[in-house]
Amino acid sequence: MTDTTLHDEIVLEQKHVDRVYSRLASLRADAQRAEAEGYQLAKVGNFGSLVERDAMVFHAARRRHAFDAEHEGLVFGRLDMHPEAEVQDEETVARRYIGRLGVRAEGGEPLLIDWRAPAAAAFYRATAARPLGVIRRRMITSFGEKVTSLDDDLLDPIAASADLRVVGDGALMAALSRAKGTGMRDIVATIQAEQDLAIRSPASGVTVVEGGPGTGKTAVALHRAAFLLYTDRSRFAGGGVLIVGPSPVFVQYIETVLPALGEDSATLRSLGQLVPGVNATREETARVRAIKGALRMRKVLRRATEDAPPSNPDGLRMRYRGEWLTLSRRQIEDIRRRIGRGSRRNEVRAKAFGEVLDLLWESVK
Image (cartoon, rainbow, N blue to C red; front, side, top):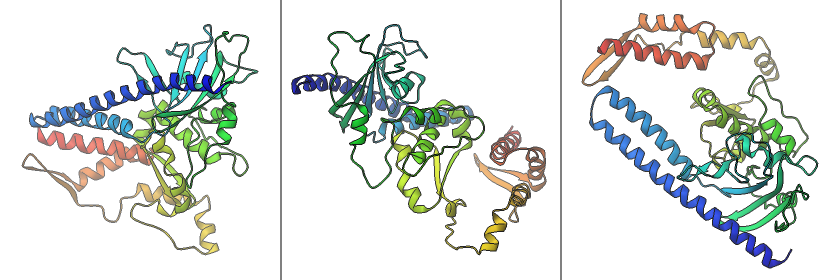
């Protein structure tokens, strides 16, 4: 490989990266316009318009936030696929660019495939022994929007065309030479095959990630959270995703990983910060720790969540369009009894919210 060959390949990839960022700027502007149009619907004044406005603004703001996020290395990979490679989804293009989020051209052409999409799995799992239809895997390193280096893995030399260029020292060596910082960095560009299996495992039951110190257990768990939010957002984002760390220092160390992956739906807390507004710093005695850590505490906590709180109000009163809407304490207790038994707490909260809105809406009609 000559310096001229590497320079030519960088120029080629830079053209595509520029195209992705240009399209991203256009999508960001579209989201800003949709958000502004949503606010304009509030001037109409009827209830249906307000609901439509809230939905439009929420989704537009979410898209804008994703586009506005600081994406270090937005485009970090490329796959050159065999023409007869097995198609995992609708992305049938022979040249696949892999990145932190999905970006399509105005005509629908995939300019960038989200790293969590099925079509991107081969970027992490393909090997020379099992190429999965990949001829060449390229790792793209950037500083800001500028491509700085390329590293290729030729996985299927027999299928490679005569003019296919291979540059760099390979993706693994590039990953090992990445600069370290003071906080945990995402590993989205360098996920190994075994890690990818854990990240993409089915969302059922408990997934346990085991390994020695420094093997990437925490990084894999965080990337799995991002993957689950991508594949089943209605299930996980609606109920909330809570990531618990052993200490505030640990939480601060990992807090930038999910935003860098385009996810802001998860809440990070240390054990002493699980209760909103409370920062626990006291250390319990050994006897108290044993009691709180015992399995029987599960029943105690379940009863505590099912019982009415001591500060339970006498009723609910709120103002809507100049009128006061009220729910009596009895109505609130009826809702509690009707939906509270046999359900999980997060599910109960969502159901209770809907029941309260239905009763209030009935009083407006």
